[in-house]
Image (cartoon, rainbow, N blue to C red; front, side, top):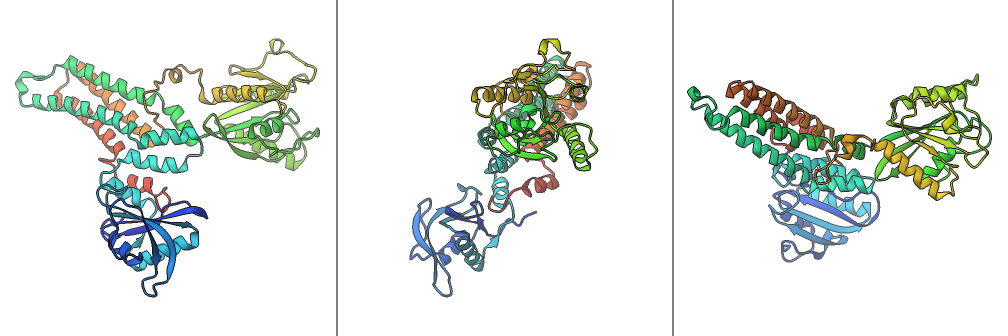
Length: 464
């Protein structure tokens, strides 16, 4: 997918102006190129930051005063000779530095090509490479922490440990094939089944965090729904911390979907304020209602807002019925006004999730914080027994590709254990165990199809 025998260059810092910008050069000619574009009488010293100037070779014109650092192979990010030029964070100057490097023999790097070379040269595995992209894309501290843990190799260590144990077990079974008349010679069927089940348990421990891990990596869309004028936009503004939605006493102020991205307990949330659900002859309002209903069907969680100051109507019950079975928080608003109904006296349809009572005034921080914690609990499904048993020393599985391959491993291990218990020949057990190993090796990038690798790296930005 990429040429790997030439020298590449790109701006390694985010686009736009900044205090400092870094241009990275990597490949066999990186020092030669650096020496031709830097005003220096002597070559760069390895791992020494050197103050110098970038010049245009033909004219000798100075482009920028910079700090250049040389990282010799194999101890660089890419595993190749790397020179990083840190200049002023002006995009015009940085592009000029890239241009003179290209004129000196470098090639503009493709998206993700630096990290791809690090992967090819054994500096990181595929899980860590994916973590680089996740870390760059992280928008909350929890997202960044999960990505950094994977970049540090916590996931890799767990998977490699399972892989090594699988290899040892397969080796014993393959050795037994040299003694066909004696059956399981180096390990008996019961021990094979026990060992395979133990490995399956370790895979299950990794998968136990999968739902929460994907939620953390991909975020969640939360729709606020209810009748007109029940306080949806007030709640939306309170959670956003800004007056994003117009709030008036007039029903039907919100006619379209209004979205805002927020950090809710470290989870990236797309909050959606919807039009009030009701029957109307106004074509604009009717379209808003249709969009609101459509949003509910695709949302990861919903907040149903009920007006505590007015008696509940059939429309309220219909909304509750339609959202039954979803991750849901029922919010009773306007509790600062006289109550028109009590929770205990109303048969709220399908209310099995939390019910929050509060006035939802934007300046009532205590009420708002309680609401946030309630909503986080609903989104994370923290009442679920599986989630409460997730061990903190087990790395979070956040990537769908990893989840699918771990499930494939688990399925193969289950078949192997069943085959061993039934007394099947070693060859049949080995086939299932090797399939389990193949899935783990694909996860780490040892046996990953080129098309998958290309798809992974194409989501990177240039300079990574």
